[in-house]
Length: 597
Image 1 (spheres, rainbow, N blue to C red):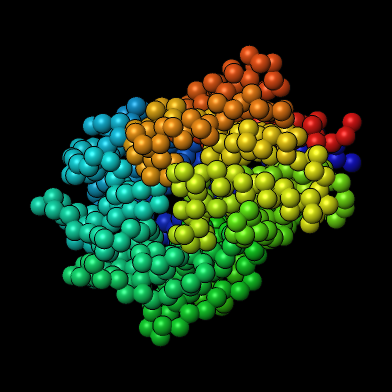
Image 2: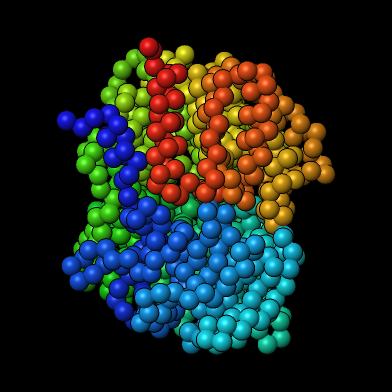
């Protein structure tokens, strides 16, 4: 019989495979997995078993294969600080060589040149808040600055002529602009309409060099698929638009006859294929409900993708067009307790202003007087999706109900919804949590006296805001890398992030009074529920000082607060031993304060 401790570790140790990517010309692919405890790069051998490619001391963040498939650039940071450095792994070599190593700076990979001789990246070497674009020769290691920008700029890909690069310039927290950078003249040309704020993503270029395909929400509520041409870059031809939902990932087949893309239906992905000759589209059936990511074509007849579901942590799947056959290629995401994992129910409730708020609801079995945990996502412009969460699944198995809401400000429901919590509307999203509690009690048999709340990053702020502004609703709280005061957060976060975050949270210049009004730090004396806090020492997004100042205040008042700092982590928690520490303590904490003795 499996003991409680063994069962918990089985939940926490469940591995996943993700970031699937085809290796050009090889009919093979790579993926990232924590099979060794930290994220590393893997492929499959002739027996379909996982084989590690390269051995790195820290986590692999990104993988980028050259057009010829003979070289790979690997991005790796140090102890979770997200300052990615770049390394080159050749097809014939066992060890990688350093391409870019300037540990004090961030580096964003932007693509290989068509001949596989150069790469482009952006970095904040000139100024902490400015990201310039560079080109590097992978043989000589010579680096050249090709574009300077006083803000966040990321190169996306090279054009086929090798003389132009597509770059993305962030304009707000949700909007960006795409430009064509001429490497000869240094001139830039904008794609899309300048006067319309929008997001642009998933750009796929055609081999004739005339244009390509992309996803945007320009002039619309949701993200749609369109065609564009370089000779008329401001004109976008809409190919497919779903009024209610966002189209997400996009990939063009090697022979350019088909496009595959995903549709985000309330947090669940649907996979579609569009025939570019006939303009007919069809859905790929038989895929379990979850989230589809990392679309990549192996050849003209097969493509791969990563699939994550509430009961499958993540694996790579393949679809063959000629056979209309779906096949699971990896079996990394398995555990001896996976049969106990539960699928959620998609629910909703009317909030204080009758806005309908969706949430995923998990429970082991119906009942009354149940303890419950509200799990709040980060972002804030993010979304709870139908994916595996070890803590949620274990809590459910132990008899807790779990609700994971997409409060106003979440993405996936249109531009209006995502902006409903901007600046001085911030606390409306916290009010949504109050409405959720009422719905859990009235609709699901949850005890009003046994409700806890937990969240990471911005979700951590939501935890602290809920505990300070609605203290009577909660019996326990867990804050993971959360914000305790927007003023100190904006003062201490990365310079390049400050400008973008101010469009969402408000600015230090104009909204300091509001920050003081809502800051959990200023209301921490109102917290009556026991609080558990986790943070990474190397967090470059939300500095550890956000946690330290709150915990210090609470300890001075002898409030019930427990604090853990991971010295070798940043904003994310990557190392398996730290996952075990954090999640084990979280579960024990919820059991201690939400269940009757």
